[in-house]
Length: 364
Image 1 (cartoon, rainbow, N blue to C red):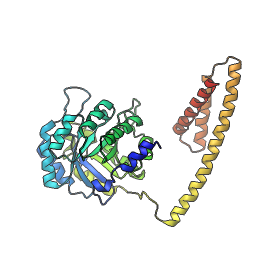
Image 2: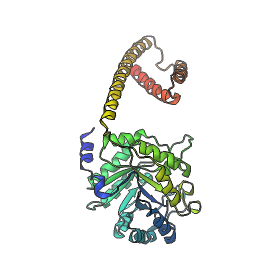
Image 3: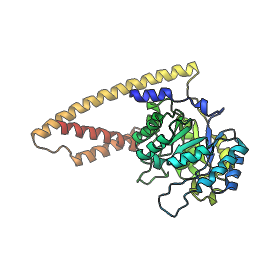
Image 4: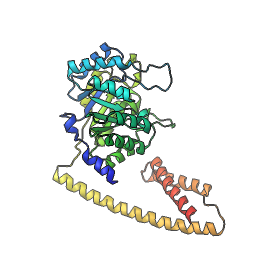
């Protein structure tokens, strides 16, 4: 792990110092957009009944892809958030995208700020926000960028840290893709997992509403997050979702949310049972042995690849033999089925191996 990331991870404030919770999952909930004072307060009153809900969220400034869409109520919604906190005692959060948003939120006692996916993707905007937050003791949540780029996510966190912000958490809301899939955004779990590896003390929150894009997917995505050790969820909740002015399909009522949270199964993030711990250790040892064999086999494979590369070079044969590669890939996928392995997984693995093989032959 790079030394600068180790330092950031060590110095991040412990989650228990800025968000009190006594059960898992803990939840940030509220409408995609604040639409009226009645809508905001009605939703918050119902959410406050759940011991899981720790923060009330509502978007005031909504970055829309095209003009003439509902872009949020703006500044007027801040007094509604103040009313929510006064009546329910729930901390409040909203999305900010520039220095003016931050100034208004801080003046109106918004407890938590979040940086949206469309902002995280732009280092100039993140730096403006970081500069505006210098000297301010506030919790900032950073959503992943819309594209699957870990560097931009890390960069946003680093910029905030360099501005003196120590209360930081990440929100995993999925990544845009041109490939058609059942979800609105690809979960691509390996990226938040890698973020956690690089910054072990960074709290990660899952946003199943934006990953799924449909209320039908909120529960299974939330359960997957819990199974991976993610303890916090951000779930869009509206008193009347079907009439919502934005993202109506992915919002649920407070009643549905409370029922859903009761069905979710939280897992222990640490192993405390000594017998289970010993069994897991033995199994991990076996996995390590297999991993060693895989690496040895890969090393041997690339030795043969390099020999082939030398022959191709000597006889002026092109490195890429597309027909051979297509047949090889089909054969691997067919074998995978017989070994009870996922074909797409094997395809991805061998595409990486093939890319490395081509690279080595080009270097010869």
